[in-house]
Length: 418
Image (cartoon, rainbow, N blue to C red; front, top):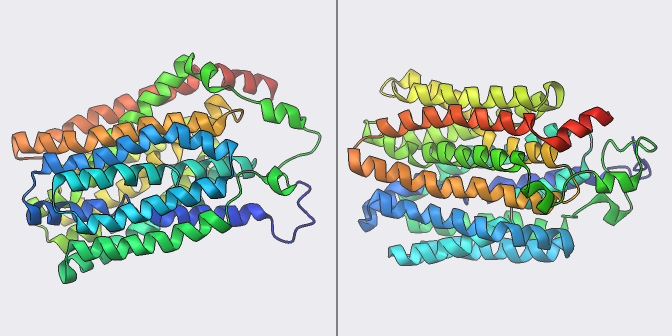
């Protein structure tokens, strides 16, 4: 397989475990628990849903603007130093949210939180897994990114209990401490950017199949990728993914309590679909490894489409449970498909920087989707229009993603060489 046989345990597995914990709380707490905190804060401080939705918009926008420079820093400088700074910034910002009482204070903390998160979870984890795994990369992504689902499964009920028992301020404080304990030590002591830094080869590396120089040069630079149609199609599809999926995720607890469910039930539904990501992410990664990315796209977005349909019958407990299953299996589109499609369409030559730019489209979609859903609700007093809009956007997203794959010149050339 490689020249890693002299090591009893391939260090890539430590990278995988480290990435798991970065995503476990980096997304599981810092992102996935925000929906449970949303309505209690709005009710406590008298904010409108549309205005407070801009909190997550600012988190997403600051992550978006920070992603390209952070991606460049991660690839060119000591990854442990860069990630140590970012994880510390994210932790301190999250803890400070417990002291916020005005929208301006929430917005300020959101800006620093977003910058910190840019170097805490998706971008560094995607870069490291891509560098450390040639074979079973989809499965490795699935196993690592399943952490965010486990985090949501565990921390959403915990967050709800903390809010009901001690208040949302204590919830932010406790969750922020957990975030720091599980990310800062990993960033400082465990992570390594690439196997070559330790004299190793990626998992599945086959000596003689291609030269190391060819591997290093395999793919497009960022300027080359920006000039392709596939870049813009892929970016548009990932943008709409953020609009649809996070608009649903952030507003779901509010929707369920609006139609008569208890806050505890709503939190448990969020925990359920996030918990199902534990199965859904490795499954999607394995499907992409075995059957290709086209079928992976059709499967994952098909699950999201079915999930949205069930929301129209959410007054039935069985329908909302069906939603949790479909959305748990399909919401994997946010984390598994973007890095895999980026590597397939653009290659590895400038992956850290290229994916950092592509990831901006997702964060921009999140930034747009959350307040749009909030303002549509404020105007109509109902989420029905939001769900109808999301059905159409889901179909458009599939068309854009498949077109990006079909029109990729690098992907076509790679297929000819193999």
